[in-house]
Every structure is written in structure tokens, then in C-alpha cells.
Length: 134
Image 1 (cartoon, rainbow, N blue to C red):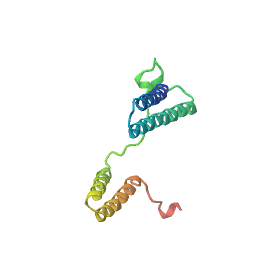
Image 2 (image 1 turned 120 degrees about the horizontal axis):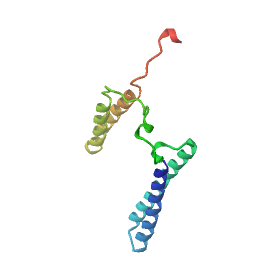
Image 3 (image 1 turned 90 degrees about the vertical axis):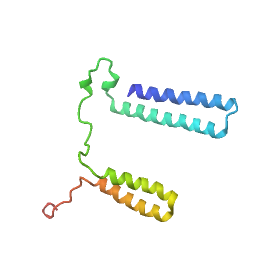
Image 4 (image 1 turned 30 degrees about the vertical axis):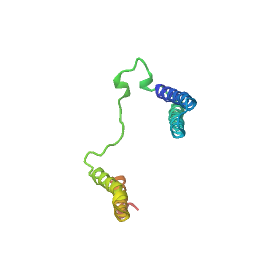
């Protein structure tokens, strides 16, 4: 993470310098605002990664120059092997975008379907308690 926060901090400083240069040569206000917001976003990400590294308090394998690939091995999380929920969620999201073009009635239907799909995807592995476990 040490390289990450340095990268984003440097990117933030670079955007700030470029914003000042762009403003001085007569850049448009929207461009100046966009570059300033980019500097702020890079700074926020850099601060978050720096703060997280300080809170963890250990050297990560990607920061160790003598680390092996196996040093970073381990469980990365649980990934659903046979989930069908991403397909209807994506189709509902596309339908929501099309609804903004077609009409408000289509948007309402698509947003309703999107909410149902997201709830289904999030609660896919939730198991209800049986009556004997209460």
C-alpha cells in the first residue's frame, strides 16, 4: 500500500499543478473545476490508502522487495460459482437506462425489477432460521 498512497498523492499534486497552469493560460472554468475535482479525488484515495496502511501496521507483501508470490497467497473472499443474479441485475440496469429515453412508465418498471434483482443477489446465500433454532 505504500506505493499506492504515494502514487495517488503524487497524482493529486500533479493535477493541482496542471490545474494552476491550465487556469493561468486561460482555460475554461469547467475544465479548471474538473481538474481540481480530479486532484481532490486522487487526494482522497491516497489519504484513505495511507490511513488504512497505518491502521493495519504491517508490511504487506507488495511493499516488500524480497517477497515471493506465495507470500500474498490466501483466501481473497467468497465468490459465488453458479449465480444467475448478475444477468437479470444487468438487464434491469440496462432497462433503467433505456427507460430514461423511452418514458417514465418504463423507468418505474425497470427500477422495480432492479430493486428486486439487487435484493435477490445480496440475499442469495441467506438461509432462514428453522423453527427449532429460535
